[in-house]
Amino acid sequence: MPMSSYEVVRRAIEFDHPERLPVRFAALELDDTHTVKWNQIGTGDHSLRETVDEWGCTWVRSDMANMGQVKGHPLADWSAWDHYRWPDPDDPGFYEGMEAQFEGSDGKYVLTGIFMLLFERMHALRGFENTLADLYLERPRMEQLADRIVEFNLGIMENIASRFPGQIHGFSFTDDWGTEKATFINPAFWDEFFKPRYKRIFDAAHSYGWHVWMHTCGRVNDIIDSLIEIGLDVINLQQPRALGIEEIGQRFRGRICFESLCDIQATLPFKGADEIREEARLLLEHWSTPAGGFILSDYGDGAAIGVPLEKKEIMLQAFLDADATLRRERLPTS
Image (cartoon, rainbow, N blue to C red; front, side, top):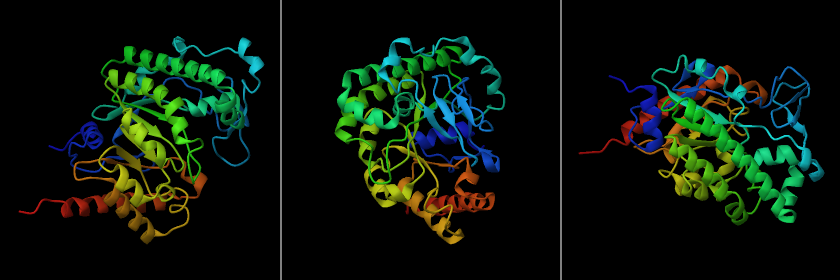
């Protein structure tokens, strides 16, 4: 009897020998996971030029179809702090309708999560340049801001866990941390300021029996060790060429589960089928192990980066073929 989708994903994360490659490819109607969301406004309705999220951050979009950018930062001026209205994680409206979202989840690995968990929420509230400067110039204020955000996140997680005990398997979040050359801040400072705050969140997720999944963009090589140390289970990396496929494999293969795909900037928009197949093979060869450690995950907004569905079909088949080949090659010889 084939493994359930849940079991395939769990085994890949825990290096427990899944029988096949786990896939998250909703565009092609293949998905071993099922996502249940609380009522986070997030980026809002993309058909509107401006939207405001639950934190009071204003999202602005151009004529190009995408999620937009935060242009209105409610804490851009620290004087707003005293009258700023913090969102309440115990607001029952955040959880209305969640139960119905479990429909169709039978046999699948169920995820919940928070969009813009900590660093991204800090600069959405304060502004990106202000945030980077204030981490050094206004340290006490930034600690207070970070801690308020962490407490909100912990409240959301506690509410979800108490409402749906045993029904959720993973907690995912986003926090982009790098340019294509390095992290935005010194890794030593990251360890000092952010590492303990992420650990609080990771520990809480693990206490509920959830794996922790993180999406982060950029060349974040220098903070992956720290993320592993505090318990990150799955890291979603969508720019493997910027990271260095061989380097990441040498440093972290077998220590964390990778959720990835062919490079969304260097490969998918510009390269052909042969290059896509070669990169799929390289990624599985360097990032996966015979025991697991890799989940194939599509980039949802293919139109925004110029990737037609046909290329996604090529990539999916390339990974499936590479997985089958590597499984044969990695069989123990008698």
